[in-house]
Image (tube, rainbow, N blue to C red; front, top):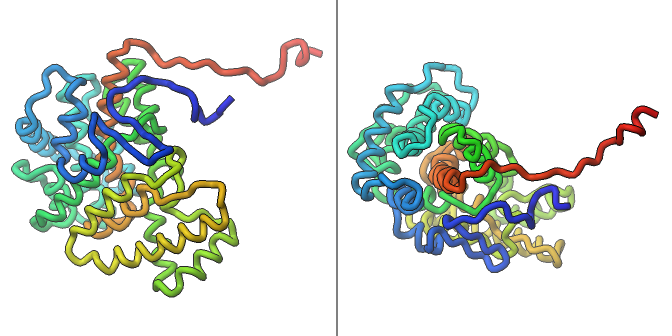
Length: 357
């Protein structure tokens, strides 16, 4: 039995296909690299939700409704000033949403997540939240709500590339959690909260921040080899490398590297990241010749989000703001099947007669 369900087929989906052996990700008929280079947050929401909602409007109208939903979310911000972490504030915001299976709820969850994450970032840093501007795109407004400055077009586009890249990724732990919850007909809000709870775990959504911690500890390119050797000798995990599914390079890594490279002022940071990447991959291939360990999505996620001035403590929350589109699509897909998820287990405990004896 595979306790991680790695080889168990638990669903049929029309949303995404992860081809781990060859390093490909297809989302609704698009290779992720092309999707990230050509679509915004609103576009990919429309793409993922096309089969989920009969009343889905055209993309332009959906974007307008996202803007209106951000305003409503801000008007209902959680009142607590004691924000221990950004993801806690995001969870509080989502938990206050109406909980049904409608398009209105889906829009409020997707748009509201950006508001709650931005407000959580500011409150975590002792600042007052900034009201949304419904006339802006979702990504542009999110950056404005964090920094208080008018967003630069290239930065908004880079954030779009990130949110699109991570919008869906097969039956990962958080998506499976969302599907299980939705199968009970608990509502989309409950499904999203289930997904967020799974994503919060460090084995799923918590790796980009430690990539930057690694960069900080290395400091200079000439220190990379010695630092990596010492880390491997201690048995430390090198963040940003290896994946449960991929046995080749994670295609999302190159999509995000490309997005980061288009931002002004990132040339030096990307060159530093590339140097570390080459050193790590070379060392891993020597140490684990029969174990494919390649660059994963977290490595260049860290570079991109840093360039967008998003603090490390918010990385998992921003991930959730992109993945919520996939959670909702999967929840609706699961609901359409009309059956509760109920797998079997194998009992390994004591037998009654042995206990009585």
